[in-house]
Image 1: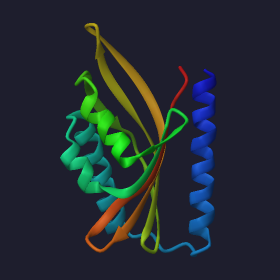
Image 2: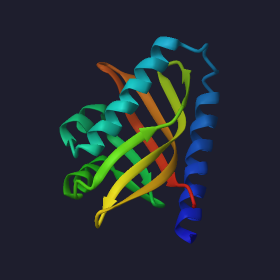
Image 3: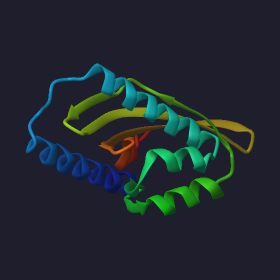
Amino acid sequence: MVLISRAWRIVRLVLAVCIFSVAACGQGAPDPGTAAAIRALEKQWTVGQARNDNRALDMIFDNALIYVEYGRLVSKGEYLARIKAQATNLYQISMEPMTVRTFGNTAIVLGSYTESHIDRGARTLQQWKFVDTWVYKQKGWVLVAAAAAPVAK
């Protein structure tokens, strides 16, 4: 429980930093095309993770990605190594509605998802809340920062 509380505090801190840094640039008008593209990338991320597909994940993650996971800062390399090494017991990731806010070449995504695992023959569910930061670079949108925290049951 302490770990979940600490992780959620870090998620809120990352969210606050993202909001304040983007607010300095001014809020842009909503762009439905950009929001749709970001939602598609979020979906690619969930599919890539569920399939342990580091190649797909590598393409959407910026090389300088920082991910907050269970209260720890994790680099792109560390995240991909964990995905590659983990058993394929992840059955499915179900995305719930998410909010995409764009600010020039930056997009902030707030939402939740549920992971379904098979553990010793039993199916378990875990819901997560997340905040992701995407930046448009030369070749398209890449994930530069992300944080997720499990929702206490």
